[in-house]
Length: 148
Length: 131
Image (cartoon, rainbow over all chains, first blue to last red; front, side, top):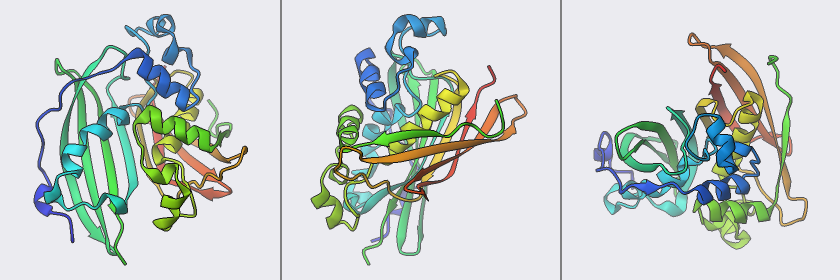
């Protein structure tokens, strides 16, 4: 079953705020082996002009992957997650995520295409503070592999 | 910063994948169960694409000399990174060349990541802010 083209151009209501914890950033940084002081030590981050520890560049997926469930788990879309692989990933940053941020996500579907028996879904997530300050825009392209 | 940056090598073991699963919340079993991975046609457990991208991000921030220097970062996952259940695991090697200086003075890097000599990313690039 191809994916439902009527999802293209749709946007969803903003998610509930995700409160970014200092220990979550430290845990994520340790998990990727990133020892930079600014990910672990609030004083080092303050020296760079941030209120608390900053997150590594790919940290926003922790928030957006969860937020995008409102799209990919909608049965009407027709996505079979057992056949999905990650195709492309892109981030455009206004600033790094900082511990203490309360971040909301607005999801949209940018594109749905089919090629060679595979289906491609591109989602865009605008991540901003609850006050409306843009932090990062995240695009993910998922590939639903053909059944044959 | 020279045009070709010093390659950076990252070791990846099963323990790293378990830790990344917990930290990221991505518990897809293809990243920890050989049984599930082989049942969907993979050679065995593979690394999370976002774990590979995170390692590339470490290389980029190290080259930039600042953890907050990245303004744009994109990759295409072109091949999986199999991670054998051994103490050694596998290795991912990240390289970069300076592609251009943008009109606003930022530096655009063309990136590669290889595992066992095979490229695992394509169309990978990062833009880092002028200091």
